[in-house]
Image 1 (cartoon, helix red, strand yellow):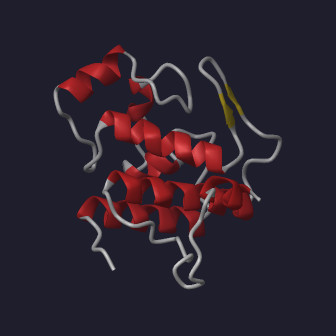
Image 2 (cartoon, helix red, strand yellow):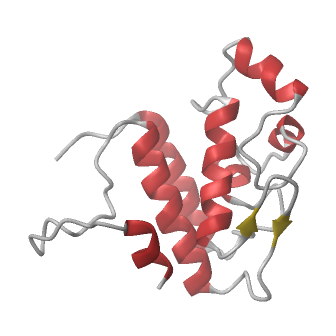
Length: 150
C-alpha cells in the first residue's frame, strides 16, 4: 500500500469531520470541499471567476506563479478539487456555467462528491486511489467515473 502525504491526511480528516458534522455544503464557499480543507475560509473563491471552474483568473494566476500553497495545495489544485467535488455531487459544468442539480445536499450525494474528491486528492499526490476496491475483487475498472455516478 502506498503512503499518503501530510496534506492528504489533513484534508481527509477535515472532510471526514465536515461530512459527519453536517457542515459540508457545495453551495457555500466556506463549507464546500475546498472551504473545509482551507479551515472554513472562502478566500480561495477569488482565484476563479466561475464556481466549479478549473480556470484561474488573474488573482489565481498571481498566486500560482508565485508558488503559493494553501494547506499544501496550489491554486490550480484547489480548483481541481472543488470541480471534482461538484461533479461528484451531480453539478454540470461548462466553460461559462455551473448548473446545480435540484438536489445537492443529502448524505448520498455528498458521499459521492467526497468519493470523487478522495480520488482527486490521490491523483494529485500520485498515489493509488484509497477508495478503489477493484483489487479486492480482482477487477480492473474501465470507467470509474460512470460507476461512481450510477
